[in-house]
Length: 133
Image 1: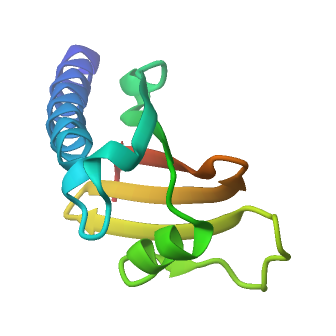
Image 2 (image 1 turned 180 degrees about the vertical axis):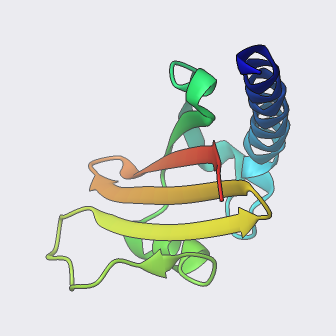
């Protein structure tokens, strides 16, 4: 009986990993095509996929990019798709946006940290994917 549960858990984790890698790859590849985001304005893209908790049905991913666009331009791009965290940020502070989705037993949470920098704006996407009810 324990072997059956382990097998089902491993199958679930494998499906979750395939979904994350596929969705993340599409998101990373399409980043310059976001309306209003010019391909030449994106710099320093990085992506980190954390599979340490995959055996528990959880995978996390972090993507970072720097753009020459202002904080206001970047926020205008994402505020229609993500919820702005409560409170009004002070000038020069980072702004947080979040979103949560569920598709049957598959769940995704996204936290976007948007920070002004001397060269424009840094955007950090933190995504968590997990299986559960």
